[in-house]
Length: 325
Image (cartoon, rainbow, N blue to C red):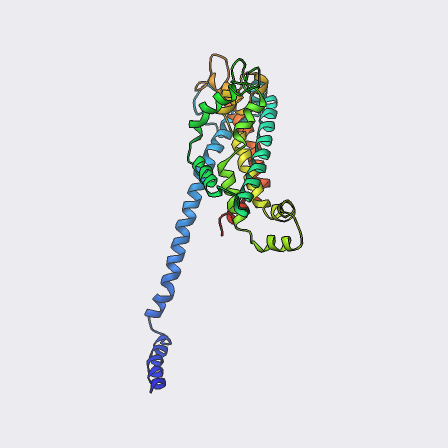
């Protein structure tokens, strides 16, 4: 009876689905397809809108940088024959792009390397090792992520100036200038990054523990496990951390401007700021047009663009793998 009843219930349904003139199955097949197509169109429109909003400021800056000098705010000259590269040449000379660019490169590379090294080792230690007060120290690091960087500018500056036994200071940090107007003062306060440490800890958390256990069985030391096994597997996370830190240091403005006073130590961001201060809308009393500043901004953005184009494969993989476990 059970078999007959089920077959009697299923058979009409099968016969109903096979009816050639049935409209209900047609709606059932087309409904999800139309909804999915409409959803894809909406998502594509939103993505296209986001791309336009993101790229529009860069294209506008490039457009203004290619225009010849003019006193109007937005000169609409769409004729490519009128475009010129003279603004880039003038900005290169006026803003000392070569000198300040080397300073920015030195600062960004040094900062990114040291920060990545500390974040990678700290992330591995906090994830894979056990030691006293581990959780408390980790919560302290997480608390550091919640503090805005603007709040710590003044304490960092006071610490660098009154650092004991440095720059003519005595044991109490008085009498000299400490690390003020020095590369150590520029680099040291920013090499410890709670965000980068958190990122690397999450990446190490996604790696299987069986790899370490197998290495320990083979007699490998903890340093050997970290250097020969875990570090190569963490390459996407390391590259991602390096790229983010390089971008942040390259674009850093307030801290290098506060801690340095010598022109020989100015970074490119600081140099472009001084250039922009004498630029109004159009020409200024110094005779420097706005087009020069736009050309300088484009030249400053090019290294970051090249870096992300070259490292986008590792960057995307590092972001995707972080926090999977």
